[in-house]
Image 1 (tube, rainbow, N blue to C red):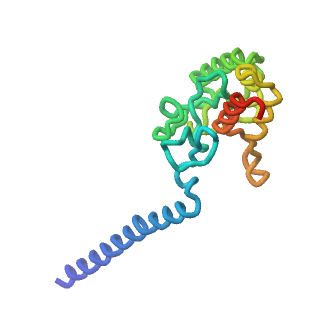
Image 2: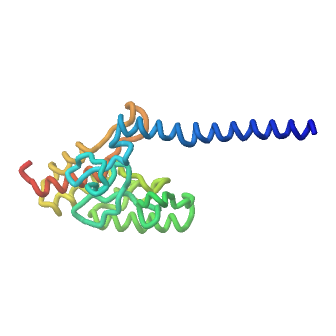
Length: 207
């Protein structure tokens, strides 16, 4: 009987701890963090959404995309993102890499075909096509490309939009970000913001 009572006491104590931890860590803490985020940084907390003018918005109805997610681009007037293995491309509900090793015949074949296609599209030698143009990121959601890949596309985008190459290069420079803290990572270009800037410039060539 004494052993049964001890078991009951320990089980009840464990149940109380579990319920307390669930309320504290599963309900109270997430609500606190969400509330602080909504008050202090609502744009970041709601997905870093932007409108067609490049302005910040927290409304999904006004948004044309997120600064945090790449997009499938099929318009030759715009800069292309890097490939994506996430669903049909940049699907945030299916974040995924190709998971193919560097020596996998399927990856080698796909990279070779993509490099040739991009070289033909941009009118450059195959050797000029950078690695990020033909390989997807680990998440498949990367919204950025290297400055080298952006530079490769300048001539096509400028011609397609009846803009000067110098004007398009200026837009690329304005949307190029350096290394974090000056040392971490590599410089990158946010493709969504760059394409919005190109679209605006093409509609307002005198700006």
